[in-house]
Image (cartoon, rainbow, N blue to C red; front, top):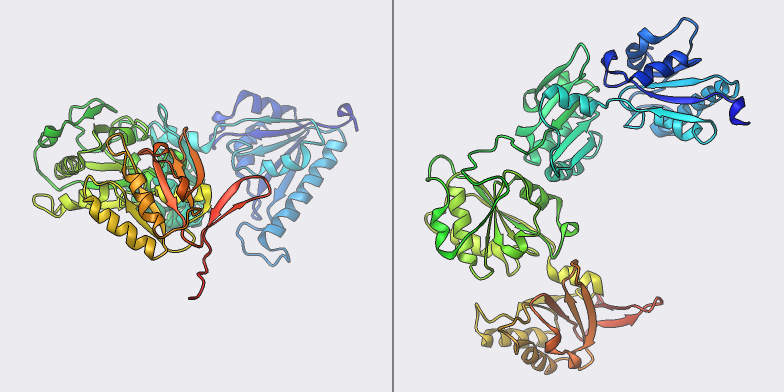
Length: 524
């Protein structure tokens, strides 16, 4: 059929509930339509119809699209999904009959038609067959924020919108990482959403909004809401963190960096009074935000103070209201005590560490200081991160597929004789080796010496993975023979993975080389 012979389909957004919040265009479309369609439950009442009621005419043809089920309990042979699919197909066929007859059809939708709305199921089935226009509406999220009277997102914050029907673990992870969030579809999901907010540490910030802009509107701190009183048309809101009450932030302007010199650790702001804050040592992974876990992202967002080596601290986005204390890479103990001093004064502190903080990184330095006076009472937590060894191994294939040992080649904190003894022992045990800190500007001979030691126990063609700046802009992964390992090609940003006698290098059909170590070890 040509466009002139058919009717026109409209998805009409009605806004959050108050009829006065309908757009002028929505009112115009409803007034001009031949058919008004709306969804309802079996009881027959329709919120969408009640919002638009003043604009309906006696000669409007009304198509009431009655849901067969409103929960996932049904005796339909296809289950809940099958029952709903059959319903949407039938509803679309009913509307298509009107459109084929040349009638204009307006499908009413609370909020915005394409934002968690039922209209979209009609749109997907009809929009490619008939001329269609979607009239946007004010979303319930926007209405809820307006009713709370607090900014929803500001600056570079990101808004996360979640359905409350997600599994609790998924909700917890996403809420922990969110700057600001709205959780929709509460009702029977409210207990799950509340637990997720509590587990993610966001319950105190959460607000509850019920039937925003309607007569029965209600707002409250979410923690105070009775789960038995929560209807489907409600949501949980985590407003903007910017300027949110979060303890005394001292006199440092929002988001400022404080470069913390070696002798300034005693100048942490304020005196020791009241309950201590907390130190969370956060693993950033080997590179940028793609390697950051949801838990780590959430802890970084929640911190009042960020403490770390300048290079690693620069990987954390600047947030208003946070203070950043950057320092040199060689002052781990000073940095740890500075963070603990801040926490003693009630601050919530995140100490950042590349990779995993427990692998040659800041967790040990912080715990070592925290086990001594005056820091024994300061709460300390460790948040893991992706290790450099695992990241490099994944890029190369699976070289760590069997037993392996992790050794640092840096002799700054232990004698080279100890390193050499451990290399010999691990090599003699035929373990794959992950070698951290292989070289730097001041350490240029260790890689060559390690190669000599390993060749006493390994064949010259043993594969060695050189992973440099994994996940970063300068990422490079190379596979060389142990005998050909060139110390000049290794720096502090490189990690070495040395295979065992069983490790294999294979060229795949696409021309790429992969390294893997079999899980099964041959019997003696």
